Image (cartoon, rainbow, N blue to C red; front, side):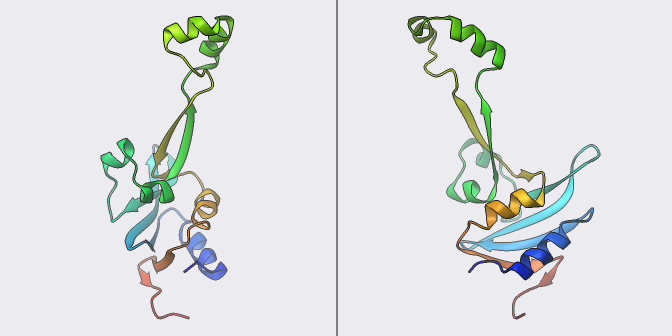
Length: 142
């Protein structure tokens, strides 16, 4: 099942304040989305899988983590390092163990900075349904 436009509006409304809580179901797993402080004076959207954020999800992300957490990419080498490596020959780079100076590191984060990013990612999911918004069950509502 997909989430309807009306449900997206309700979810956005619930997560637009200082505090918000939405529970979804993705592939038989409970996904809890909360609006809360993620840093000093900084609000964000936090995604919990089965009411927890596990350290192992950072190290070895599962397929579910890849679906529901925010994918971040960071360059392995800084701009300064890239400039130095470009001056070196490919042979010298190979000696240093550098195959691609534009290599990116990919990791997944349970934090979303905005609702629009969350919505664009979750709209692509097939097996997703709303369970509750702000603690009010959606089951049985038309």
